[in-house]
Every structure is written in structure tokens, then in C-alpha cells.
Length: 115
Image 1 (tube, rainbow, N blue to C red):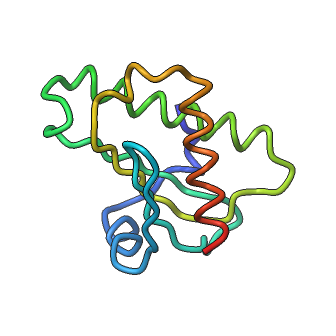
Image 2 (image 1 turned 45 degrees about the vertical axis):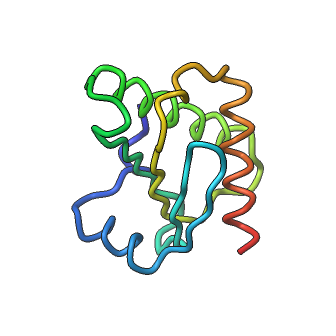
Image 3 (image 1 turned 180 degrees about the vertical axis):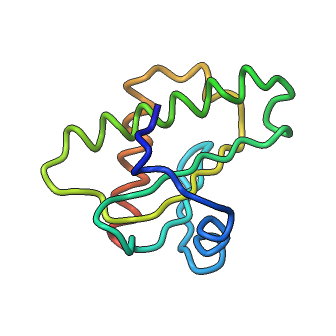
């Protein structure tokens, strides 16, 4: 589970990221990001019912992605300074090994930091 300080509070904050954020795509994921106004990052994962009808599967995808970003944050020396909304486009992400999923998330994060 993502800690409370890394979660968005309210719909307006997420709408702001959708309006002003830059988009980066890698594999089955797209991230929209804006520089954070606070000290650290905030993250939301959006998994549509079009991806999978089962709420259990959608929540499993969400939890896997939250965990990968938590691990990435723990491994880094410098903090992540972006507010991000991660969108998932395929349920094949449930079958990806954790190491490969972590590489994909790191690639997305590097792309966001470069732009």
C-alpha cells in the first residue's frame, strides 16, 4: 500500500495532472506527470473496467504498481519530485514478472525526469 503522503487528495489534483501533465508511454503503461508542488511525489494508478471486468484483477494491478514505485523510491538516493497519474491499458501486466515490471516503471520515471 502506498503511504498517505504519496496519495492524491481529491479529484481536482488529478484533473490538474491530466490537464497540465506531460505524457510518456512504455509498454502497457502511460504516465502523465507534472512537477510536484510539495516535497515528494504523489501517485495515482488508473485501471479502467475496459482493461479487465474483475475488480479483483484491477486492484491486483494497482497494488503491484504501487509496490514497484515504493521499491524504486526506496532504492533511489534523490527523491522523486513529480505528481503522476499512471494509466494501464492491458491486463497482461498481471503476468509480467516483478523484475520486468520494475524495469518498465524505472524507464517511465527516467523518461518523465528527462522531459
